[in-house]
Image (cartoon, rainbow, N blue to C red; front, side, top):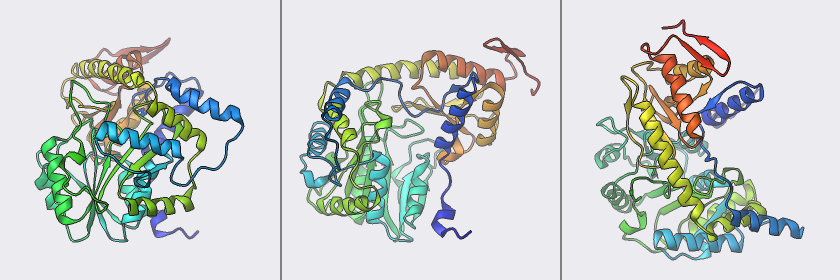
Length: 405
């Protein structure tokens, strides 16, 4: 069978595959705990549901404009002014089927084959594959000091004549790192000086802890004209716990949005009017659900860090935001894929292997589930790999005897 070069180069999404594995095990009645999840357990905001049901009850559910409904665009404009202090026009925004599609059509709009895109490691699993889908070259940047916070010098060392864009996700998935004001300011200045694009993946920017604030990229830009090469991406998935609605958006210069809309029009057409209706309801509605989610996550984070600190030899960097912590398990196994599979096989705890995020020896653990799952899940992990743990463990009525340490 003949498969394209690009098709052969694209790896399966590890996170989606593991989610599928979890669903199969759960359906079989296995006592599996999901510590790899990327979706909050909160309910959809009532304003989103009200908007959605109002339209569906009308029976008038038609095609949407390719770049978004009027209501959705106005919601994005309002959101951008409220959280970024920037006034934009309808021609500066596009609504897409999730932040993933917004990023994808942005990359397809700006990249040529052999162009390069720089992004810090660890990184979201889809970044390198999305760049490769454009025939371009992904360039991950690792902090020289071994942290999750690269320096400007780390970035500059990877810049070449082929560099077309820098892509940042802050707070970062998987590490939860929030990049500093100085770093963002330097990145903006660098991109403007070099004439390259800056893509800001901001989908977690309201889910930050301990009073931290995510730097606003526009505060450091000198070019506020339609020549600006800043692209800001967001969605309702994380902050409003609306992962299944698949609504995201991008804000950029008018020409860029026009081309992005052209591409999207041939890919999927406009995203569902029903889902946009719900998303607009969430953005325009009461925001207490976001505050409540952030408070829940901050408490869950505290519990997970307490549990992890009971291990010997783990290196844990407290996350600034998101609902993940990226933990160095290399003392126990430097091969994160093997370790993740081992934990799922032996104690039915699903984790995400760090190699998929660019750093082997790490596991991404999520604390967006219940406190019970966090405590029980970490307890099982500790029992499976810590030689100082008791030799027996009960999972429900099932007695496990450890015979591998």
